[in-house]
Image 1 (cartoon, rainbow, N blue to C red):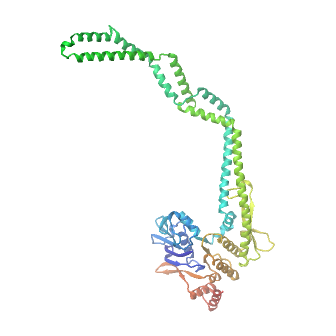
Image 2 (cartoon, helix red, strand yellow):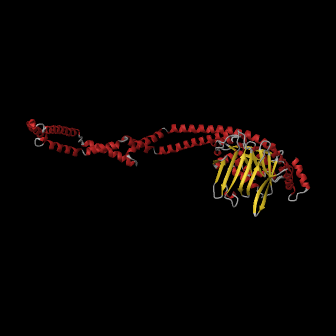
Image 3 (cartoon, rainbow, N blue to C red):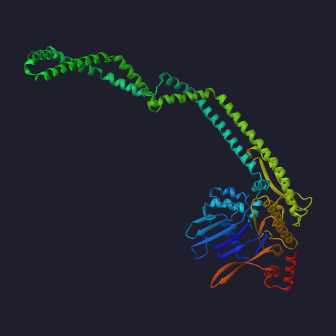
Length: 553
């Protein structure tokens, strides 16, 4: 429950510290005293979007801190696993808003995102404000409210996933139909280009290999001519080999008389002769291996030019031709096997649709059952609220298939009948102002009991009613507060008298400044405040006696 609320520099509040209790907590005050500021401040701590105008005039920042005590089993702790909030310790939500822009959110002094704080706040407090009726009156939100009451989150999520699976399968089938239809239109072209490229049979890396072979063949004649010139230079005029042999014999005749000085000369001549012989052998080998076939060059050039022409035609690189051929073959294969593929996709789409329908119909049945239980619960609340002859009906209808969606196949609407035998109709059209407020309270009470929030706040839920009906409203809120902490902002003395704790909200003018204060009332002050609510500005003894009578019940 909400234990403490501290507010600093928010609109008319400069400094405020409140300690709340279990049960029914009542807040009263004259119109304009600042009750809405109090609720806006709490909402800020619960993660609503920061409004810079909330910062009190003349201050640089404002802050709100809300402290909660929770059982270890409360689901909010699952949201807080990542920031390691220990179970059992108070949960402290703090929001600081700066006038120059921006805000900071913390939970137990650890910085968190506003979205996480909002998710946490939604599980801690439910605020039923004066404008909450608009959501209850709008039939578009009734299905969500029924699902919340029936705790159908898991089946609703499952139906949503199956719906998206069904849509994806259907879209895949439709896309395949479009692709195959287009492919059939292009089938003649596909067959032609596949046959053309298939006959060409491009091979990966072929262009580079052909370019090297073509270069070699184009230069073969020049290489052969150079080899002939080299061989002629080595063999003309008796050849270098004969000259080396003659020089060697001349040195050998006198080598012994030179006392070793000519030995290096002989060794050099021998090496020259060996190198010379090897050079001649290499020239002969290269000449013999040289490909001088003009027809081979022509064939290579023809192949290379054909590949490059095909690449230009299809606006790609020669290296991309094998992949292009594979792509065309796959498209043609898809056309040829289209009936098989379409049948497969149709079966997948059919299975996905059937799975969705089964789950959606099961959810629909749960909604019908839960709707009946919800009707009984709301009708049970109407009796104490002096609407015992009224009827409340949750209408659950199946939609046409074109209106199915991730939320299932149902349209849900709350209908009421205020008099026996009268036709049921929408709340907004059937109920009068006072009746509408009581229907809203009954519905809110039933919905609140299905939520996880341990604290409920009702903002002037009793407006438009008085007398015995207001007594009934107060009694219902008091009984609701037996299991939950309930805070109610009220102008009704009967509702105020039902509270277990009472705070009065006032606006004060101090030194040309206006402040909002909130004071916990003792029994005597409480009697006086309820007497004021009964009689107005002038409090009479009769009003005090009536107030005491209301408090004593």
